[in-house]
Length: 484
Image 1 (cartoon, one colour):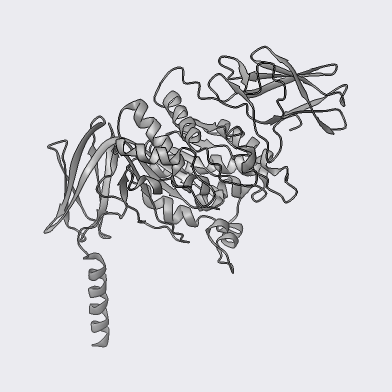
Image 2: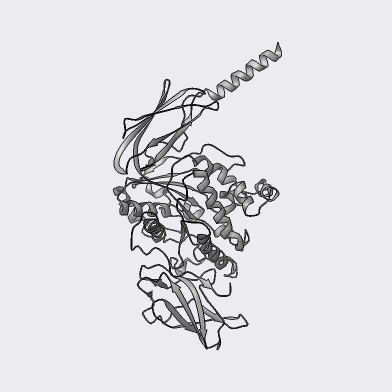
């Protein structure tokens, strides 16, 4: 008799767990943006076996699904071309009904990383966003730029839901928007003349391993033992030193949302952590796994070079240039990915501040990468000048570059007097500052009296070094070293 009662009780509990009625993920709601010209997923949970109906304001088509034994259901709704017309999406099951209002159709991007992605338009104490106040006021004219900033959460297990609320740009909500993501989305919206939805999932101080799945980490040589050791709670520990926990709680739940690309601003926390030489392959493995998770093919992945910052008490650890080089290489490891350079976007007085205030050009450079490489716009010149090769002629080192559209320029004047950043070394690999001797628009010559026969040349190869050389699109020359 007790056994029968126990079984009956268990059945009641199981039924109660499933019979919670119609629910959507917490991050799916009014004001959201759905990806245009595709089959966009809408999903949730309902009583097991119940029929779920979905109707959309832009079409007479009715969509239906049956909740599985676990209550999960999903439909893919055909979306039209983007427009500024607000729609209502209605989901019903039995007596339950959910209406999502002010839904727009446009472009949807996922934005992730650490604190420089998290940094809001209102800035932080003693760290404002340049032009932030003006842009917040102006954002009242861009209610079709929408953002959801997911709440921080971590988990050792895969999660199916996470919290957040879609907001429309405007002086009420823009101050809390990610500055990098907002400037990216605003520039896209302006150039494409359509709504843009931004899903922001980030956490300051986190390493790349936090945003990778167990399988992705194992693909780059991690073992179950090393991953488990990282995941294990530590006294005073947090998400920043625990592998997979943010992937599980803040990325995996989004897997059904139909996005059209990723932007990523991370790397500072990996300087000196994951062996710097491996960062590029970690990022490549992460991108590959994200794309598989979302099932959208090789959608673009654009990311930000870590900015100048001293990573040691001495002021120069030498590790940041190594990580930047691995970031550059990462773009060659996976298709449809590219890096936005930032070595010119820090002021001298910001030395020691890891959150540079110039977020507008960062967001716009990311957007220009998308506009040129993904949306097919011509002449945006989104690629930074980059080292190709070097030659040496007596006391002169000559550096040959690519992506120099319109030639090479500097804010120090057309003769490049006073431009710093170049160094040369002889066979002894002792480095000395070099003076620029000239340029023909796609190459730069430099020399140093201390090195009569240079064998190596490098540029901005320090933790904190500000670039003053650009192409005509005002994109900075990327750091390099021929010693690598």
